[in-house]
Image (cartoon, rainbow, N blue to C red; front, side, top):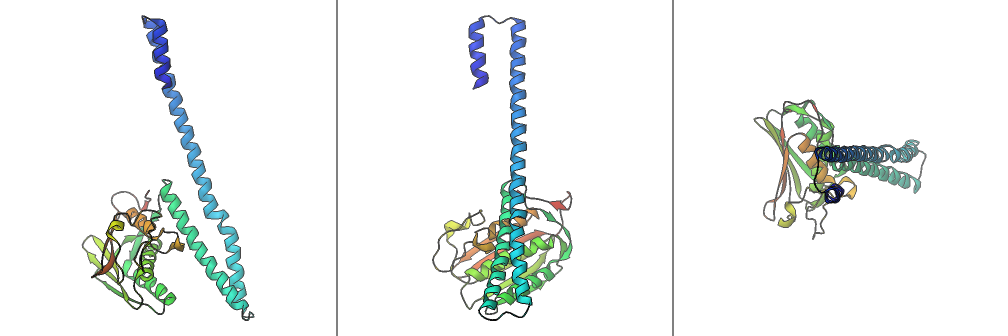
Length: 286
């Protein structure tokens, strides 16, 4: 608008334009272009700095006091000198601190992804079947009244980020336990399919409404539902579980599919290529 207004008023005042005046007009256009480029560059730098500050607050400033709370609670529990009700209170503090730490992790991953930094992954050779069993053992210990069955078969070696794959499994299996009907079994089926590995996590319970399936991996997508219908994963009840799982799988150049019906239950199927395409082993996704 500024450029057009100046040129329109200038040409109206000048009348016929001479070669010298045309050169001046060209220089004016070049100056506008340079100013615009410099403004965009400065804005980008300021935006990047704001991102870094925000991530630093999430990643450090919130963790520091939380770490002190966690360590204090663990120390009190380890002394073996606490009696009720103080023992229960210390245990609740430790549990709440751990949950808060998971929430900060989820917020940090969400922020990285939404601000364009992506969720970083570092690939290394691993057996995904072992990771699945380790995650299931850990979750099963926290849910002694629920049953999780694992069927892992085939050649399950490949290059993935072990910690991030564990995070995907924790979110999806936790989602299945949270939204599956009480007393039903959650199954985790892992098998090889030539160049990729497939992980299918299934639970019985109320189906996900059809109008929610398309946007189920959207960030902060939490719909009010009836009963225990699956909507999103754990991650501190922030509604980020499925979003983060999807972002991690995309960073591995994979995909997650979901099917849900009253007759067959709900299945989240993860497809993971065995190897990283031609680029390096360090990857991020926005």
